[in-house]
Image (cartoon, rainbow, N blue to C red):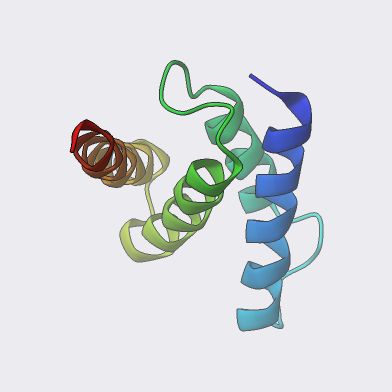
Length: 93
């Protein structure tokens, strides 16, 4: 995985998350959970900056909604898979 794409996607998602949640510390545990999630993506558009951004934002949103890391990972993975499938379908045309 491109380290630059991973770092950029995480930074984008985290900056936006902090804008929406002003009471959250820059070093909140959710930040390290986000980096862990994005770092563990394998074979799913891992060099596609746009897809990584979508996955990062989806993960943080689901983490807030579900309050469970594993459930948030599964939900973000599902969204990412749907985006990959849609992208693949468009390329086949």
